[in-house]
Image (cartoon, rainbow over all chains, first blue to last red; front, side, top):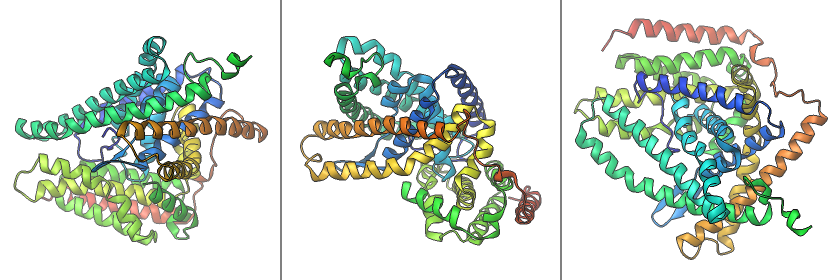
Length: 218
Length: 239
């Protein structure tokens, strides 16, 4: 649901303009945070950004529903807050250029995706020691979806409220969106469980705090 | 979505209209102008004018109309949500809510359908932080490769029984499959970085400088921009 990118012209200026300004500020801060990072990291970020866009296009059948993943939770764990926010911005910008989401609301769309994934690494770091990589990644992804979904709902509800939508219709919208939000949390968390389980077996050094697979063998 | 993107990418490079020959910078200015006018337009007549102008740009760029409809119709679903939420019994409010995003997305489709991605990202990368600007190029470059692999992977999962069993099993298996894509992405980034170093990478993916090379076709773009602005001035105060 969080990657149902908001198009141009449906939100008021008071919402999208500050959103764009804050996103650009966060982008500058993220660039500062990654100033000394290895240049290969940018290529890795690019590959993960492309994977995010690729999975957004693929439908995962869930009974009567077709679900589109975002993978922003695992990306947040693998890249950390600064890198994940940059990936969210780049993905939103590329999508906006093909009409999927608005150009003026790139900032808000990036913040919806990026805010949750910025919390993924801290949540993972907190839980990985106690639960192990796979459950910790699943929980971190659930946190990501929880935050991003809440932000998406808040932005859309604020946009509707600013446009004069009454409380009754807002409640109807929330009643419709809430179950989809819950489904999104569970689906993304289970996929993230599989991702972390596999990476922990094959390339644990890619996970935060993970040691190289060859270390144990030697 | 990616299929649409791939087709747009192809026509952007293969197109031979004056719009394709014009510089990326002038088209970026006109597309931004169209988007901002659509977002702020108070009158329905102006929105209709802008929507017509956007279609005229798309059609004269010889972008396949089906592709243009598919790419520009994406905001419909989301805009319908707002139409329902703000339904007031008039035709004006829903039309405004639909025409704004449709015009903006058509303008974006015209821009990307006439501009190859290195030219389009080059001016953007100059105003964005270095890692984000580079990220635009590298993400786009990796996109089609990873998209092909991801769909192949999910097809293989289905064929090998990965789509059967409980939802928990299916999703965890899909996650394990996607983890191979993460590993592939990591190894790909190592190879790509090595290639970049071999080619004399200076620490920044700059893109080419064609984006600001003016041609005679830019006069056409400037003319289109002026016509759009003139229409906007004339129709701004209309209902």
